[in-house]
Length: 322
Image (cartoon, rainbow, N blue to C red; front, side, top):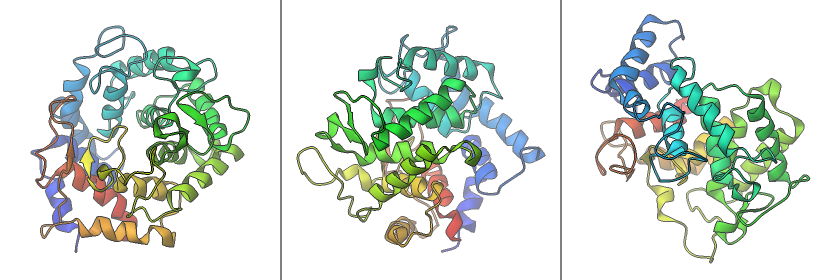
């Protein structure tokens, strides 16, 4: 099916947030393009970005001071992740830079890992990946962030890293997943590591990226037969596409991570791409199947209905295959 009808739908002006992202990532407008600049301005002023920022405290946190993990899903962690997925940037609003700096000040452990409480034992792979990626997407530059990327790679490889109850071993092992490798965490970490500029990817980072791809494509993502704490069935959320995307992961995000890592043509991803295409309706749109409505800042659509945010996500993943 042609993507033209769905792209035209995303470019409608009634949803300025989606329109900005579509122009930037699907149409590939130049950063200096007048239409893109105007769309970004609309996205900030009339989209959800300003609704999130108006709740930021003068000190640089949302809801509660400190590491910002709780309460879900409106505290600092979730607000920064959401802003990054909306296309916000420190270059466009000084409040975002202050929030990023505050977050690292309170979430970075002495071992250079990102933690829910600022201590090494509070490190979790999904949080580490999510927040490293979010700060990078927000265009926040900080020497400490470069150090935590290197720590994250060594953590995957088991290279001189100390492990704790949650972050309990190499290859994405997590105490919350019965000390087994966690595919949710692996996806977040792979996305983060793959987003590093090529000239800043160290040997450890490149090895960790390959380890992430091999793990995620070690099984057919459509079956999602990844290790679970009690050898139970795969989590049903794998097959439900949503927006925003927090610590839960879906098959769409696995594809995003593997493609970002440079493995979009890997034959092990073929079934995943076909599955994503199969979810497109007769109008070229994808439904919102997982939602945080009433839990986070803003409303991003009605569950079970065609959704512009999810359609944007799907078209971004499928773009290399058009």
